[in-house]
Amino acid sequence: SILKDGDVITIDANEGFVYKGDILSSIKAKMPKEASILMPEIMKFSDVELKHLNTKIYMNLGEPDKINDYAKLSFDGIGLMRLEFIIASYIGEHPNHLIETGRSQEYSDKLAEGISLVASKIMPKPIVVRFSDFKSNEYSGLKGGDKYEPKEENPMIGWRGIARYISPEFEQAFRLECRAIHKAREKYSNIWVMLPMARTLWEVRRALFIMEEEGLRRSDSFKIWLMVEVPSTVMLINDFLNLGIDGISIGSNDLTQMILGVDRDSEKMGKLGYFDERNPAVLKAISHVIKACKEKGVTSSCCGQAPSVYPEFVEFLVRCGITSVSVNPDAVENTRNLVAKAEIKNFVSRISQEESI
Image: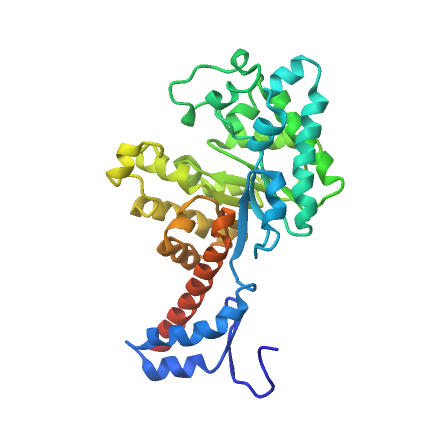
């Protein structure tokens, strides 16, 4: 319905796009300084093709019940489903308190119920469930939590993520999360998982071992993702990918504060301009991770706030070759437009460079 017999088209074989018109000839005629004026002309056609981007647009989700409100949004899946809302609002008790009082099944069942609700609504689109990432001060706020949580001066870089899962004090609770995933996947095979706050290779190996013991094994339909939030993961990204990781998601908020040594919640430092995902050191780290993923054929994503806030950050991610971005529901449509423009700009730039050789 878009193209008619006899229409002239341009095919981008590298990225899998089809554009109306002889863009190549137009660029050659206007090179080298005027190629940019073609962008509005190209975008007229691309506007009707926003559902067919090379870069997938995923959505972040906290409240399972909200999924119906977002049904009409044009997203390719859930790139980050947080378990924290289910734990805090649907359950309200510390998992170890439930275990100690003989209600382990109740915990895993409620987690499975929330996960299944979302998976059923977006089937067959994937849903990437991040295992719980509460910090110790947040867990202590749950019923019974004070008994099981340490008092940490800096919980942001304390006992959280994988370090918590593999600790004897929390391993059983992590196993219950794994069982919840396993139960939900009995009906919905579009459920994948993601491990947050990966710091060392040995802890990831241990977490993967526990997951496998609970029946969560990698397969064509079950993918295991890893969050990249600390410099050690960036520096050793190839080693982490070699552990058997199907995808990574860059948590740009945490990664920025870890690289720059800036508290992301500090209003003072924010006003002074220190917390900025566009800092060259942060961009270099992100580029390094995406490049490593491309070389190994591993999915790469970004689930921080930066893609929703800075158009130039989206353009940077697309230029690096990221395979998806995951944003909050209110940013989905705008991000899709930003990605479309970035992909086309990247295409025009690449053709211009090739023709100038």
